[in-house]
Amino acid sequence: MTSWEKKPVTIGKDCWIGMGVCILPGVTIGDRVIIGAGSVVVKDIPSDVIAVGNPCRPMKTRSGEKIKPDNPQK
Ligand SMILES: CC(C)(COP(=O)(O)OP(=O)(O)OC[C@H]1O[C@@H](n2cnc3c(N)ncnc32)[C@H](O)[C@@H]1OP(=O)(O)O)[C@@H](O)C(=O)NCCC(=O)NCCS
View 1 (spheres, rainbow, N blue to C red):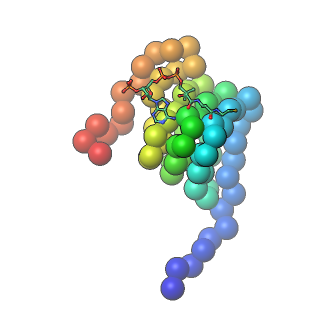
View 2 (view 1 turned 90 degrees about the vertical axis):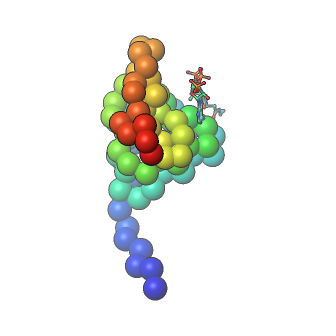
């Protein structure tokens, strides 16, 4: 049987969570983050980024610089 742990989700200041986003327990989202519509946020997202996808990863900074995926093989 699955054991369910209660872990809080923390969302920073001035964030915009797109439509239909799923944020898993224990995840922390930094300040001034945009999470793209439909994303599944499985791990922490740093401040000042736009993050998208499943799993959700930062794709660019709020100032528009592209961010390389941490593991392009995945
Ligand atoms: C995240 C978001 C703000 C990005 O907008 P943007 O900066 O204009 O980004 P772009 O449309 O130029 O897309 C850049 C890349 O991210 C991808 N992307 C954008 N949004 C995505 C999403 N939600 N999920 C997965 N990938 C996404 C695009 O496919 C594109 O990929 P590519 O470079 O491989 O072609 C926007 O796509 C979004 O999801 N907005 C939320 C809309 C919403 O929920 N509205 C609710 C009404 S309140």
